[in-house]
Amino acid sequence: MAASIDSLLEEIAGVEDPVEELQSLKTALLAIPVSVLKDSIRGQRLDVIFSLLNSSDRTQVELCVDILERILMAMSPVHVVQNYRVELQGGLTHPNDTVKILALAQIGRVVEDPDAVTEILNNHDILRAAIRCIGEEKIAVAKQAIQSLSKLSHSKPGLDKLFQTDLLQVMKDVMATSDIIRYRIYELVVEISSVSPISLGYCANSGLISQLLSELTGDDVLVRVTAVEMVTTLAHSQHGRQYLAQQGIMDKISNMIRGAETDPFSSLYLPGLVKFFGNLAIMDSPQQVCETYPAFQNKVFEMALDPDPVMIGVALDTLGLLGSNVEGKQVLQKTGEKFKAVLSKMSQLASSGPTELRVRSLDAISQLLSLQPEQQTEDLLAQTESWFHLLSSQPMDMIRNISTQPFPELHCGALRIFTAIATQPWGQKLMINTPGFMEFILDRSTGQTKEAKDAKFELIGALAGSSTAAEILGSQHYIRVKSYLREGPYYVSAVAAVSTEGAD
Image 1: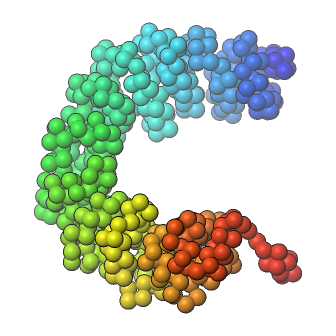
Image 2: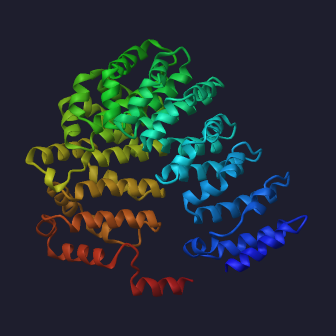
Image 3: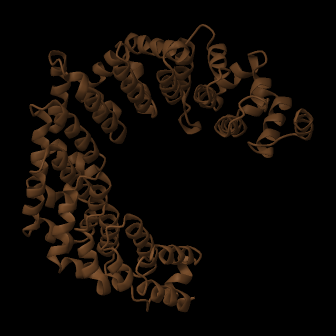
């Protein structure tokens, strides 16, 4: 096998237009499993393929990239950096973007490997060129550069190299190119900050995070929108949230929500501010966030009743997020009539809004109504039941009507609401007391897409797994539910199969 690759490489070396031979080599490599390739490739000299990258023939260059990617991935990062460091460095400034991406991906592998990383840390020029790739026009090159460089945060020497040498100035120089490039550097910094409190410390000391935070209240509204997104990402880690709290950022964002009413451009960044607090609430404590920053909760309710579909969509997603845990449900219940008005609007949207908002309403309602068995106290069961009945005078019929409409996403969204109430005794009682409902959910002829079958199966599984279902549904229905579960989501009965063949 190694011999055949050798001979193909020799053939390529002696040909003026090697595209056909390169295609043969690529085909041969793809036929060899990576595990086998690892053992046969170590001795190969790839100088021939690397030299063929210096061509204006795009097809030739891209074939070389495919071949190198396959072979280099089969080699250890140590072997790659010790034997092809010069070639990798050359790849970072190659005119073809696929070559840059290949070189950056291999550098990422090396940086991630504790035995190989020193070779890169000792090579200032490679890291400098990699940082400059963040300023490349093509976003795929910049993304790969960010991904590979962020792996430097896995070790103290990597962080020292990036933030305590002149590479920090290289980053700042690249940032100065444009707003777009500046935000790519922020993306790298946020990515590194998220890894650990130590990596966050390096980023904070560099001054780049405080620069990002200052952009939250900058004059350029579009820049502000992106800054909010970055800060929301930073808040995904606990140490990130602690840092933001220490810097007074939560208060600043709360004030921005308050001040949005007088800003004609607020519709651009307001959704991001609300998402920030929504994420914060679900990661920490919905009660604490809603009590500390009442402007957030008030704004969510206001947005849910807004005519602007963008505002409504964000409000629906946030309400679903808040209502997905018990504490969030209790916070919403405490608002009384305010939440009842919002729930009524959600029901209205689910029944007759634009399709996208109908789907988002259904998802939010299913999250609000879901209650795990261990959470099913008398009070919480009474709460979810009362919410369900606020949806309509006949909520079972309303949701079933939505599920029979010819849109798979609406069908599945409605089934998810039934799944949410299927684990709760009051939901099971409604199911058994609604004429034709058990037949409807046990009928395999409805909802023929894979997603629909999966959603139905999840509903059946929720019913079958409930400790109260056998008693409430009665043995006849419960046996059919268990039988459906045993047969699996895609079962076709022999009678159905024969009739289908007859139709064909």
